[in-house]
Image 1 (tube, rainbow, N blue to C red):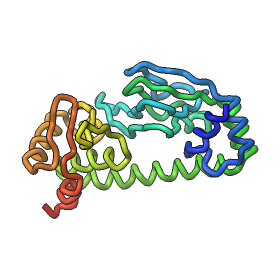
Image 2: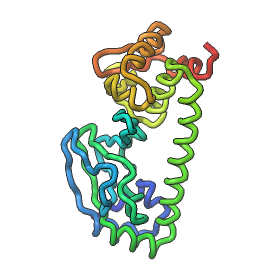
Image 3: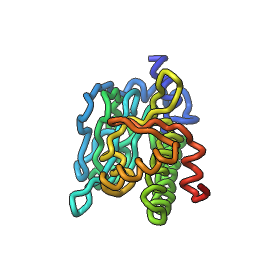
Image 4: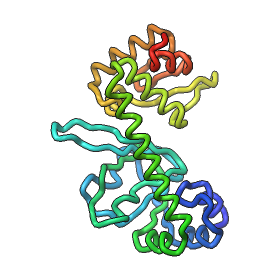
Length: 230
């Protein structure tokens, strides 16, 4: 239990929360393991659970009216998700999918709302997290609206790199393990366009590609391409 409380102290939901709040949350949380490609919930579902991500990766996405997928975020530990549907009467605002085998802790609605009521710091953390996510979506929308395909793909790669959503090979180089279609969903474009953009970035020697992998060779060079100075 003490180990779980130490982990919870790192979760943005509980930053600065008193020890008693961590103890109550640790007692209420229920661990669950989900295989890769498991759907946690779909857009429109009723929400009764908040998820605290302990290991693995989770993708949040929406499907537009034409049936195209738009990835909203890729989350890693110690993020939490699924809180919006617990704050009102509306359903889930997006679909959540496990990208890899994932361990989460479930916090049910009644326990979540009790923590919000009894501990203002937890309530403030929810508000801050929602504000940060909204600000990030606005910034992303501006970049993806004005950049060409190469700049948009460079931005997506950099965003994942900055957020630590990468692995490292034996030489210590950063590797992004996503398909061209997954990158296209993040960049709001087609898989074919992403493939062409990746080839152009490879010719600039800032990345190299392999099936389902992008090796980030020169992050600073990617930033130069993003800002149009290269």
